[in-house]
Each structure stands twice: as structure tokens, then as C-alpha cells.
Length: 132
Image (cartoon, rainbow, N blue to C red; front, side):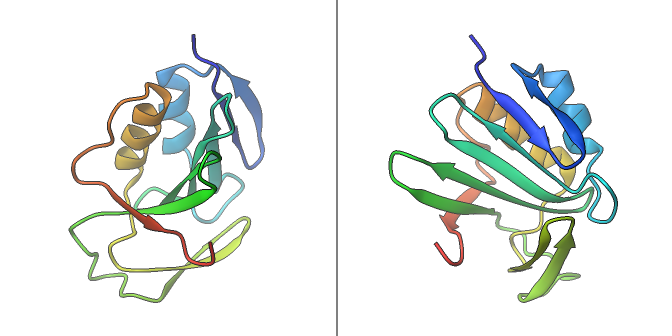
């Protein structure tokens, strides 16, 4: 049974969201505008969250059992966004490394893996989120 909750900036909470609903919400995110972040939370309090949108997304996950918050990264640093580039979105700004920028389609896949308790794609790795 899907006991997930999808929340985000300026859209109503969805309980037990479908894959299509997750896809639509994540793909609708934009770094500037009224929809610039979202989270998918499980019954145990673990979650994945995204800030930004389209080609400028950052993804983090949280595990309440360990208290760890981790940021996603990949093996293809983005030369357009060198280390230290700011992601500015509705909740503020974050400093990212060049390998922490994701496109929205990849974020959809991460969210669906989390929802379905599947292994994340091989291209996604995790490291401690700054400040945690």
C-alpha cells in the first residue's frame, strides 16, 4: 500500500500519489516561479526532496532512523555550473557542487525509486548534505 505524501510549494498535498502525479508535479517545477520545490515523504518520516526545476534541480534524502540527510550527485559534473554556483528557488538559495545538478527527468526516476522502495539508478550517488 502506498502511504506516501507528496507536498510542494503552492500545490495541495497528495496522499498516496500515483506515478503520473509525481511525474507531473516534478516536471512542473521551475527554479523561478511559484512551484520550485517538492518532497515525497513515507509513513516512517523518510523523504526525498527536490529544489529547483527543469535542468537545475538538487535532490536530497533524509532517513529518520539514522538522522542522516544526504545530497544526490552523479559522475558527470556540469561545466555550466562550477562548484559554488547558487541554486536560487522559492525557499531560499543553496550552494551546489558541479556534480549535484540534475535534470527533472532524473529527479522523477529518483522519486519513483523512493516510492517503490527500489534501488536508485546506478548513476546516482549520495553524500552528506552540507550543514548536517
